[in-house]
Image (tube, rainbow, N blue to C red):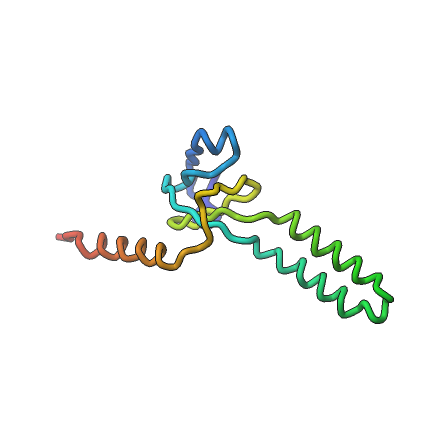
Length: 126
């Protein structure tokens, strides 16, 4: 697999848990165990379909409401939650959600950024 930006070849290191049970526990790119879970951004289209069906329901005698409800259901079932790495932002789709992973935590990300800044400032460049 190659990086889409720089075209450099990437070597992915999948863990045994990822291969056997399709659950992410260690990042295949950066080998870090820190992840958060979020909704796929395209799920918003399901809400747009539902709202369009509600708006048009008056003129279509409720038929558009059924179509909007189907669009809502289709988008929420087609696009499950994403697992995202805190460090390299690698996104894992179509994986089982690990119960240890929570929603995005701003405090946790701030601690990671502080550690990176401390690491950069403590180096001695001569």
